[in-house]
Image (cartoon, rainbow, N blue to C red; front, side, top):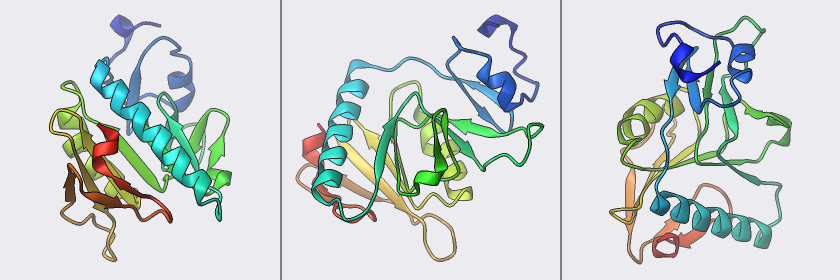
Length: 190
């Protein structure tokens, strides 16, 4: 199958999604959302974040946390059966504590932290659609990284299971994550 033969008005199963080896896409409630390419700055910033988070987690190895990066599927929520029309996203970076959620092909259920690095092609999806999606699936922490502005906006789930208004970090601000040991100056990402 190729992009031209996909019916964007049809809902697809996870099994169908897995058969599309060469198509970069996500499924939102079974509907295909095509993904576009990334920029060099997107890749550079993403790499710096992955290295920094991995290093900090190794230094604070009192708990088992793992960092994964795209393309790696996150299935929300975990499908009950093969007929479910799931939501499958590929965040730029995700952090998971519960190793039972990780299988060779995907993370089944909500990660503890999701990070999206914005590109000109992903602004609306990352700032609105995915914010709502991640909140609905009670992902505890969501970072939106804006390479052009050199900022990181952090959203955290509150007691009412809604994200707060988001705190913007820039320049020499120190970002404190909900994940133990993750304290980092934002300028190290840029």
